[in-house]
Structures are given as C-alpha cells and as structure tokens.
Amino acid sequence: MSGKTLNGRKAVVTGGASGIGAACARELAARGAKVVVADVDEAGAAALADELGGTAWGVDLLDVDALAALSLDCDILVNNAGIQHIGPIEDFEPAAFRRILTLMLEAPFLLVRASLPHMYANGFGRIINVSSVHGIRASPFKSAYVSAKHGLEGLSKVTALEGGEHGVTSNCINPGYVRTPLVEKQIADQARVHGIPESEVLAKVMLTESAIKRLVEPEEVASLVGWLASDDAGMVTGASYTMDGGWSAR
Ligand SMILES: NC(=O)c1ccc[n+]([C@@H]2O[C@H](COP(=O)([O-])OP(=O)(O)OC[C@H]3O[C@@H](n4cnc5c(N)ncnc54)[C@H](O)[C@@H]3O)[C@@H](O)[C@H]2O)c1
Image 1 (cartoon, rainbow, N blue to C red):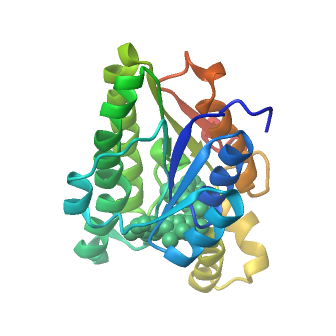
Image 2 (cartoon, rainbow, N blue to C red):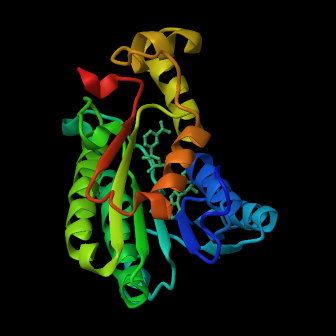
C-alpha cells in the first residue's frame, strides 16, 4: 500500500469474502476506497465489510437476470469471483461448463455493463479483471476455466477500447497458483488423482512450469490491483499483467 490514493473512490470486489478478493478488498480500503464486498457467502462478506468499514453485498452472480437489470455506482470494479471444475472434456458435465462460463464471463460482462454509465458520467473508472495464467495458456482438464478466462481477456480489451475516451481503463491480472482456499482444495484433489502426498503436489504437478517454485500470495495480487486502480495507472489499459513466477515465459 502506498498512501491514501483512492480517497473518495467506491470499489466493488466480487468474490470479496475469500482469498484474492478479500486481499483486494483490504488493499483498496487501505488506500482509502469505500469497499463493497460482493459475495454469495453473505456472512463472510459482512464480516470483512465490518472490518474494513465498507458494505456487504450478498449476491449470487449466477443470477444473470438480476444482474441484467442492475445499475452500479462504483468507480472501481474488480471482477474476481471464480470457481474451478476439473475433468476431461468427454466427461465434463455440460451444466458445470455453463456455470463457469456464466460466473466468470457473463457476470463480469453484466457488471461492467452496469458500471459504465456511472463511470462515463464521472470521466473516471477502473475495471480490473482477475484472470489467470489460464487466460493466456491452456492446461488439460480445465476446458471451462480456460475458456472463461480467455473470454474474459477479450471482454477486458473491448472494454478498454470503448472506455478510453471516457477515462475508463480495463485490465487483466494473470496470476499463477495463488495460496487460497480454491488452490488448497486442488492440492488435495491432485494428490489423490496422481497418487502422491500433498507435500509433493506443488513441485511435481502445479509448479513444473514456474521459474520460482512457490505459490503467489493473495497480497501480491492485491498490490497490483491497488496500483491499477490508482491515478498512476491512467495510461495502462487493455493490458494483461502476469504474476506467475515465470510460467508464461516459456
Ligand atoms: N487461487 C489461484 O491460484 C488463482 C490463480 C489465478 C486466478 N485465480 C482467480 O482468482 C479469483 C479468486 O480466486 P480465489 O483463489 O481467491 O478463490 P476463493 O475460492 O478463495 O474465493 C472465491 C470467492 O468467490 C465467491 N463466489 C463463488 N461463487 C459465487 C457466486 N455464484 N456469486 C458470488 N460469489 C461467488 C466465493 O464465495 C468466494 O468467496 C478467481 O477468478 C480465480 O479464477 C485464482
């Protein structure tokens, strides 16, 4: 954190009750923004909002009809909520594929759509999409996740092109594996699937492509979100920032 650079700004962070979203909410609040913690986990959102002097928004982002009717008066929108489902395409449940695309691509589109009128009216806006290294690289067994994140990259660039003349920037962040509940669960799953101890999953399965063999910390992602939200990043738009320990350098 560097100074109260976001005083007077209002930020909405989806999936803000846990992991990367919670770290982003803390970072934006520390920089002076009023933060809305948006999450289907209403109790988790309320607890963090209390801690930060912000507000909680209990919302199921799979309810796209409600999102289509929405108007949002925020200056900073962090599209972060996400889930994972792993399996080969021939066995991949169509409903699981649709759920991931809805939560991680359609909902961000609807939230951007709901936010832009307020941002355009103020001549300022920051859309920050928490993508993934899987927004720019593929892995087997993650057809829905990789498709959704690649789609989010496209949405972010179109938003950047439309928003430029209105003072609105749009960018993606592309982390490698981050130490969050979403990944802790994957470590257990991968250990089971590969028949190895959990302690070996990072080196043998998840971090094989990375030059730096450790997980990203949520606070490291949040610090980049804080900077992208600031005035200093006013000329940064349509970009995708990797934070993957060198995974995508190959
Ligand atoms: N953890 C990683 O390694 C990693 C790496 C790259 C990108 N990401 C991305 O970062 C984002 C956050 O991931 P995380 O690891 O912090 O996950 P997490 O599981 O810790 O948190 C996700 C949050 O999203 C919320 N959420 C889930 N479904 C929702 C719904 N229908 N409506 C509203 N909220 C909902 C959950 O309640 C939870 O609070 C995701 O988009 C993920 O794809 C994560």
